[in-house]
Image 1 (cartoon, rainbow, N blue to C red):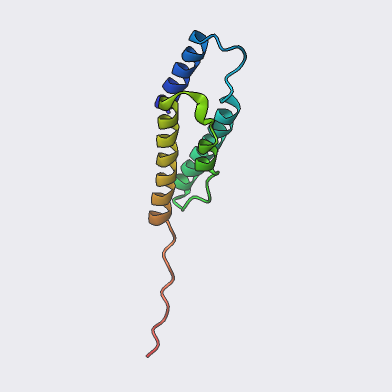
Image 2: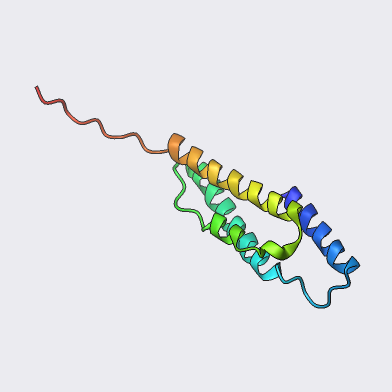
Length: 109
């Protein structure tokens, strides 16, 4: 999360130096991704609290891939990419290790 914040601040500084008028064109998509990250984090925390597998996460990769390519910040892309990877990997690990045990089926002689 700190890497994303640092990259976003760097991007804002770059836009100010370039004297780009108006808001950052990538901001609406970044806001959508931020909300989905918040939801995913809450889902993963809840899964850990109840020691059960998490449900489906929001479409993090899809949202991250919709950040305009011309946003001009490789650091922002790298930071959001790593964050999405971390959340998706955490969900996969929790699903694998917190899944309810399968009911054993009786053996047929």
